[in-house]
Image (tube, rainbow, N blue to C red):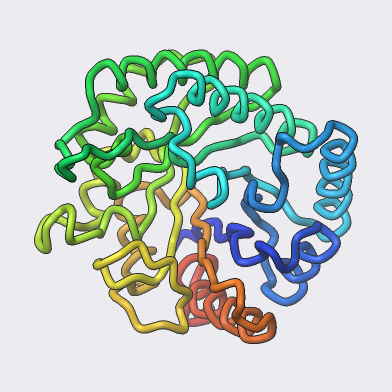
Length: 308
């Protein structure tokens, strides 16, 4: 079987192993990985320039020292809590657009060539009803902003941008059809927009229905536009972001098999897990190590049985 590049999003490090001299040895020496995805929960691209310059230098140095490739940088939870590029106030959208430009500049300075994450959310209605799509004017404005961001990314030296679909009617895109439309509308962008699909998002049964939820359609339909995969353990009832010490519905071998069958074995998969801030550090290290040990035979090894 073809090995699938396996890495980890540094979400598990938030408020804990927050600097490269802390997370790099954990990734390399304790997890045995050489591929990571930086979270902007660890570095805010709006920090002062001198602070950002030191952070970028430290990331480069740690990556070199430990033989780690920082594949990409993703928005993280902190910025995701805002409505970003779909906020009802266009001035806030402007701020979010500028935040992304700063994120591109920082990533490039740290030697990271790819940036992405969810795009934003429209505001809720007073009656609580969630339509099946965001308003057309909001979609058109979003596409225009993504076009400008692609130009800004190219100027910074970024090579790929990512959209992470979420299982929410107020965000975009949340269906395969919407994702296909967005890909078509962004075709020819100076820096290509790709998708990061997440095992906890595409399988969310309360939104998609018990028999429609699943990663199959996303993989099969969007394969040419998928650039990476986020992996988590979940029960298909919420976007859990559990590690693989938890009982859930995601089987690592089946997940890896589907990715291979859909011609996506060359796209990296990143474990993305979150923990309560009050949980003790040692238990998290043990849980993450256990999870990676479970995933490696399915994703990262040429022959998980060890046959020669």
